[in-house]
Amino acid sequence: MDKVLILDFGSQYTQLIARRVRELNVYCEIHPYNHLPENVADFSAVILSGSPYSVRATDAPHPDLSLFRGKKPLLAVCYGAQYLAHFFGGEVAPSDVREYGRAHLVFVKQEEPFLEGIPHNSQVWMSHSDTIKQLPTGGVCLASTPDVTNAAYRIEGESTYAIQFHPEVYHSTDGKKFLENFLFKIAKLTPSWTPDNFIETTVAALREQVGKEKVVLGLSGGVDSTVAAVLLNRAIGGQLHCIFVNNGLLRKGEFQSVLAQYQGMGLNIKGVDASGEFLSALAGITDPEAKRKTIGRVFIEVFDKEAHQITDVTYLAQGTIYPDVIESVSVKGPSATIKSHHNVGGLPDYMKLKIVEPLRTLFKDEVRRVGASLGIPAELLGRHPFPGPGLAIRILGDITPEKVATLQEVDAIFINSLKDNGLYDEVWQAGAILLPINSVGVMGDERTYEKCVALRAVESTDGMTADWVHLPYEFLQKVSNEIINKVKGVNRVVYDISSKPPATIEWE
Image (cartoon, rainbow, N blue to C red; front, side, top):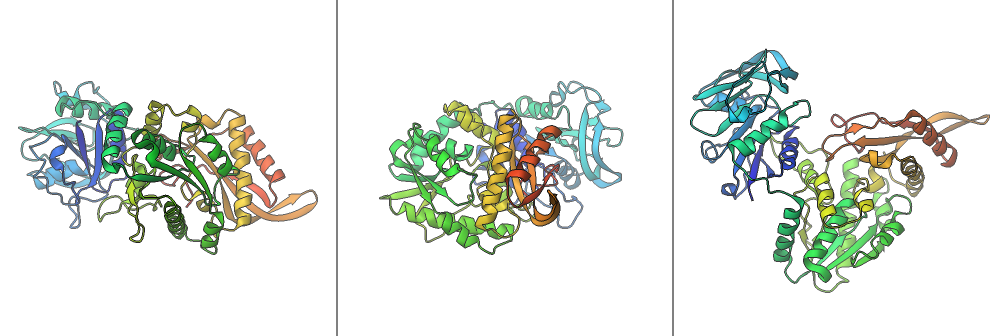
């Protein structure tokens, strides 16, 4: 299977490049520019990402391209394009004006495979303060905008192409076509990355990795853990032992409903109520990262205890997906850590279990497509994502059983109302947030001073970017009234209209 290596120079859009490549049924991996994979020879093509740095800065990322340049098809995006120019015979200088936002190609070189199907005046998205004044040695200009002469170029005598705009973002209307041309017309790759292909190769890899050993998997009721369970079950069958831990931070009634959902699916599942342990450990903690790390620690402790009750368990399986990995990796230069994820990374030394993550290379929508190929019911695959730390990161400030109970009631009203009004499937993720403030209200003839909750509903494909959903005003009014009337201690409801970026989907 053909694979594409994406070198990350810290751009906020790097993960979007991967998403677009995957959409074209080509497998790809993101690696920091300064931590190359050991098996570079296994990759058929390379894409260089953008970067917040200037190539002229003293601390700019400075990769060694000797393994790729002229040896593999190479597409350099934004920073990558400027890097090739700056260090290989061209010139990069500050732009007269900051080149940010929409632009249009007023020149498109004819009879170039890379530009096939790209119309004159095609809209592209720029995001840089430097510009290429002179092309590198052997450079041939392919496209220009009114302000950027060298918007795209290639290097004579090699399969190296470079663009100063971002084809991966939505605003580049023919961005997918640029990537398609590079992958199939320049690199000559085969689009073989499909759900069925993933299942076949992953099942084989799991059987080889696990052998005859036993595996413990934490089921949450969410899409990721469900697909991971069914995939593992197909690979190793009775060697898989599923455990569902109640951390006391789940949605209302979810512990019981999740256990019931998996009946008849052929999974060996045990429910463990550890809510007291989690809530005790979280008492008095207000910092979001501290909450996540505490939950992760207790989660591992509970699993360690439960695993020891199963004879000869060797592996702990987790439903980690690619966005978790990307957002949790921070290397000097590449993308900064947004937040830690309790199900990413290695295990503590004291724990005897090895880790297996069958979905680690998949984006969220890919997980759902794989799940459909596995025959998992649509109602399970259609569930909204729910964070691993649960309601702990939707309660701003310290966690108490009373706050959890309040938020569970609010969340239940919101989610059930979405379902009752046919809006649930139009939303990618929804939930409620309990704010650490009180507000003045009036109920009857009495003054109240009670909690405020925020409702959040977003649309997305992979969780890396998201827009808020324009829910009908009448719906929001009805939900607000129901929450205030039915949930004691809440007298105000607000709706979050922030998008990601600059906000995140969760508040913590």
